[in-house]
Image 1 (cartoon, rainbow, N blue to C red):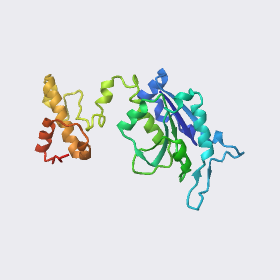
Image 2 (tube, helix red, strand yellow):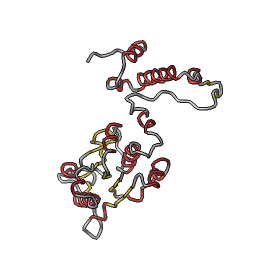
Image 3 (cartoon, rainbow, N blue to C red):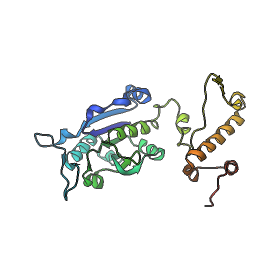
Amino acid sequence: MRFHVLTLFPEVFPGPLAHSMVGRALGKGLLSLQVSDIRAYTHDAHGTADDYQFGGGAGMVMKPEPIFEAVEAALAPYPPEQRGSIPVALTSPQGKLLDQKLAQELARAPALVIICGHYAGVDARVSQRLATHEISIGDYVLTGGELPAMVIIDTVARFVPGVVGSAENVMEDSITSGLLQHPIYTRPAEFRGLAVPEVLLSGHHARIARWRREESLRRTLAQRPDLLARADLSVEDLKFLEGLGYEVKQK
């Protein structure tokens, strides 16, 4: 999969994307990262990519012309019939919150263009006419869209075949399954008086699977109960949750 990042600060990349699984995937050619300087598409001697707001207001606004031209340049190498299937994402606090479902959807495309917002924001015509997605990584404001772009790439990349060692690992990730992940342990079996639960040492696969499911349900109820309303829960799951005080809401 190809990622095209459009930014006012290209020197920030690849940053953490050069390391770990994503870095290895870039090295193997499973992923590619092209970073373009939006200022390269301006048409004045100063490379002006922002301007004052119409109507007044604090903060500068990123101009539409260089962004449109940068996106068009990123899409130009693709056949015309393929361009319409390539998402163009604008990082924005006003955007849809990034989640695993959205990441999986974006990973189905052959490429992803990400526009890094900055300053007080981006001219509204970019979201109205150019971007197919506005994406936020949380209900807070950052100084720019570069960190969100890296988060989006890292999240989407995990769904690209071969990036993570096993597809099963991706589908069992916390949140992907609809629940938080159960506790996990490795050697030693006892450390500073803390022992690994006996069931995990039993070799009884059915008991281990049920323990993991119940611990996942317990953790989700304690930390993210909102997820339970959307999770695919069995009758056995619901009985276990009711025993923990969870009130099942009738649909």
